[in-house]
Structures are given as structure tokens and as C-alpha cells.
Amino acid sequence: MDEVGSYSLRLRKSKKDGENEHITINTKTITNHGDHNAWEEHEIKVNDFSEATKILNTTEFKPFFMLEKTRFTYRLDDMEICVEDITDFGGAVEIEIMTSLGKENDAKRKIRDFLKRCSVDEEKIVPKSITNIIMKERAFNQQIKI
Image (cartoon, rainbow, N blue to C red; front, side):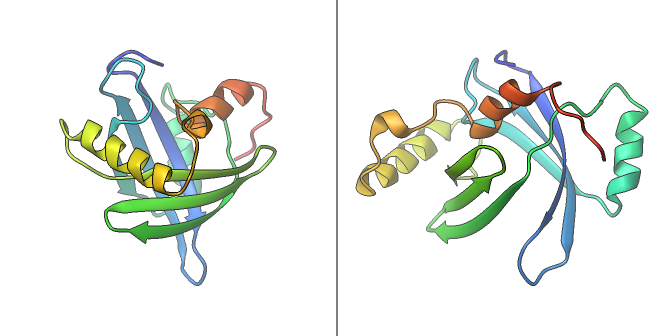
């Protein structure tokens, strides 16, 4: 999944403190070869997780990976900072800037500058998404019940 045009499709159920459950379907498409830190992303809300699962199961899309985590989300300027505790993995921090095509490098630079100000060493920065790393470890090895 490094080629331009490669994509992932995700059905997500999430709940923030004090809010109702959110269900979404999301795609992320690689726009630069091997770059898992910038992609084209689209998302829609879904009302029924079970029915969305049934729809996907009647197509070529089959579940092969499930990720459970607790996430705390913060905003600083145009950055979304997510502090995560991922089941059977541990802690992680994800920083994201939603930007338009052609401005990915500026967004990455802002994130790296922020991490540098926070004294995060360059070698601690994951070159691909944490989700991608965990997916490669667990895909097709899990018993998934939806």
C-alpha cells in the first residue's frame, strides 16, 4: 500500500466524553508514493454501524483489522493533537493538519517544528502512520467480530 492511488476504507465507531456515538466511513488515498503522512481523505457520517457493516460485507470489502484505542484530542492553531492509548500497543501521539493538495510539505514542516519545540527527537517520529504499522502486524491475524 505504497503506490499512488492505494487506499484504505475504514468503518469507525467512536464516542467522545459527553457526546453521542459517531459512526463514519472514511477513505484515505495515497497521493505521493510511499508517503503515509499525507493523503487525500474523504469521510461521511453513517447512522447504523451494523447496517454499514452488512453493506461492506456484501462487496469486495471484508474486515481484516480492528484497532481499539482511547483518544484525547486537543487543538493548537491549525493542528489537531491526539494523545492515544492503543490496546495491545501502548501510547502514541498523532498530530495532523488538514490542508489542501500541494500544501502537504508546509503542513509537515509546521508539525516537525512543533515537535522540535517540544523536544521530541527526530528519530522518535514514525515515518508511516502508527495505524499502518499496527495493521501490518495484525492484519488477517485477528478474529474479528463485528
